[in-house]
Amino acid sequence: MKQSIKPSYTLHKNFRLPMGFSPENFDSGFTYQAQARDTFIVTYPKCGTTWTQHIVWMLSHDGKPLPLDKNINLEVPHLEEVGSDFVKSLSEPRFIKTHLTYDLNPYNPDSKYIYIARNPFDCAVSFYYHTQGFIKHYDFAEGTFDDFFECFINGEVDCGDYFDNLLSWVQHKNDQNVLFLTYESMKNNPKINIIAIAKFLGDNYVEKVQNTQILESILHHTSFTSMSQNQSRWSSQRPPNMTPFIRKGKVGDWKSHFSVSQTQRLSQKLRMRTAGTEAENLWQIPE
Ligand code: A3P
Image 1: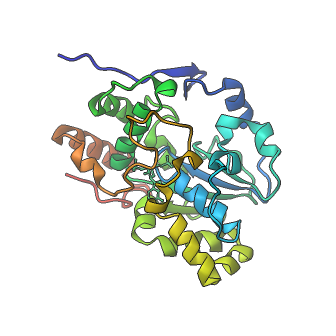
Image 2: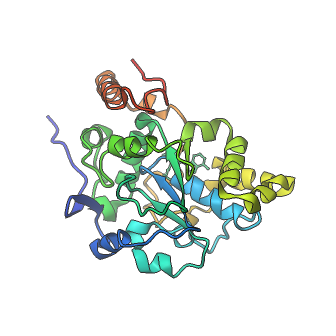
């Protein structure tokens, strides 16, 4: 039988960090004091973070797309990756990406939090290709989906357990400073969701989307087709033989990756972990 392979991580306290990520920056991220004008884009990895980062960037730049010589992660930085000082160096209002659970995320009652959830099946597949492709961070180029699935379902991946993250935020989905969206709803109706984000951010942003040209520009430049172009804007480089960072952008891609038994196991976990919570009806659970 083929031996299973696991991604490599830097173990730091109770966390797995991608190799090469700085534990000092990670620790410093927790010391960041959330400011009243901050908006956090919070996700479990692979649930639509970059897409949402680009939407908020365009909303705050009059509908202009991120130029080719910029990287979104310097504009809307990942707190745990860059640390507190980098984020503090940005002018306000700040947009900040995190993958933290509600309790660990810097909190200010006047800050805003946009949480994007994605069904765990597609998330697992997307996270697999992410982990396989960033060779220097995970040394998992030869890893199979079956290998990764075991790590994912046991929460033994960077950013921790999918369900811990989702359940921590879904309890706050109706808080006045939380906007809770799903990847599937964004795919189904991007316009409604872009407008919802603008409304949540406030009147200045509503004015932007009332301008048809700006709204159409945001819709166009944040579409999957458009974001698939010039991908150096979204992440560090991946080897050319690996899948691109903006990969498929589909709902239901999991069906061509999961075995019957994997489907049953993740469905059972989803059912058990979400029973009686606000998350239980977010997605139809496969049999
Ligand atoms: P897939 O791997 O399923 O294609 P994150 O930014 O949180 O890492 O999420 C990455 C996932 O979001 C990838 O999913 C990526 O293709 C998808 N994605 C990125 N931009 C998108 C867009 N504009 N529209 C739809 N999906 C997008």
